[in-house]
Length: 78
Image (cartoon, rainbow, N blue to C red; front, side, top):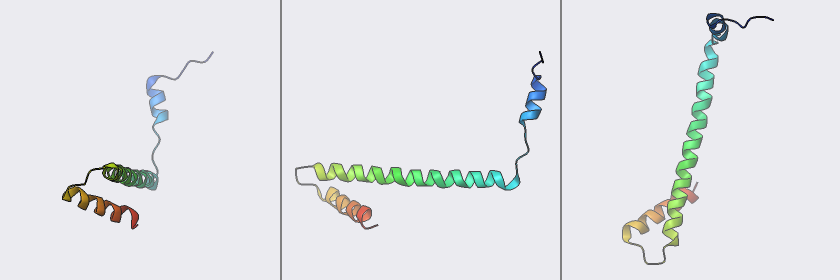
């Protein structure tokens, strides 16, 4: 039976030098994914708000009517 490596040996084996461009490219990739996720969440939030405004049966106040028109233009013009 062989002995398992010691703590220091296991640590030294686990620490590998990073390639210079690799860390940056991974960060940029994760950042772009995060940006896409945030934009999708924002769009879903706006769609939910528009859905609630459209579901109201009583006449909307002036500020809600303006918001509804703005959301419709913003979401469906792109």
